[in-house]
Image 1: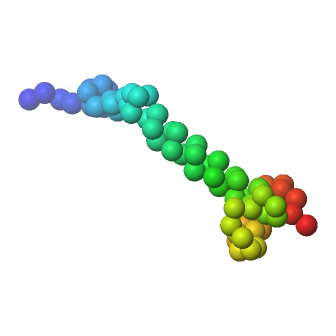
Image 2: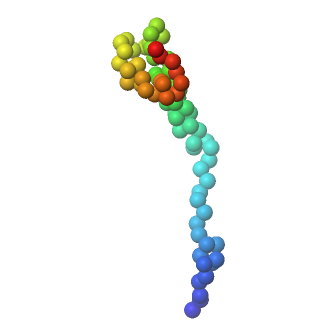
Image 3: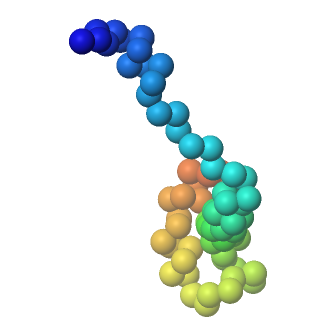
Length: 73
């Protein structure tokens, strides 16, 4: 019988597979676009530049505006 040691177990452990940048790029772009949309709604969706009429979006993101340092009133 062979005796297994801790160093043999660690040496034979499977290494994680590398993910190519080409496979990650669409997800990175998608995440970036979502972040830009979120920043727009938190920071600029108010007043004359509003895409959605009324104050619903403004009131929904009101605390986030103050947390991120955007002035609103």
